[in-house]
Length: 93
View 1 (cartoon, rainbow, N blue to C red):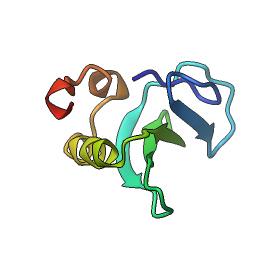
View 2 (cartoon, rainbow, N blue to C red; view 1 turned 30 degrees about the horizontal axis):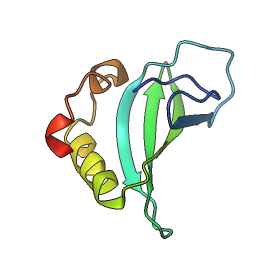
View 3 (cartoon, rainbow, N blue to C red; view 1 turned 90 degrees about the horizontal axis):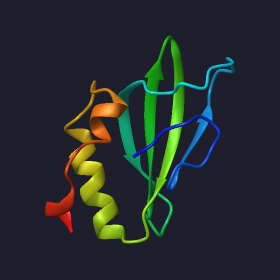
View 4 (cartoon, rainbow, N blue to C red; view 1 turned 180 degrees about the horizontal axis):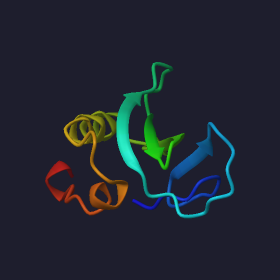
């Protein structure tokens, strides 16, 4: 999973909560929440990086798979995004 603020990377979209000119968004996962609007086909990643907080939106067409991804990532709070991007999710397919 790639992460670059304000740019599409796969199906991950990110928007800065605080504006600073930085293009190297790696950060630490602080929280993940599934959308409470139906269909629940997206989740929101709250990421801290160098004193700023960012929110990314991961769009997943399959709602059951989206819930599985949320559960997997909830077990990876405080992990670097680069590390999370290397997780093996093949067992979820």
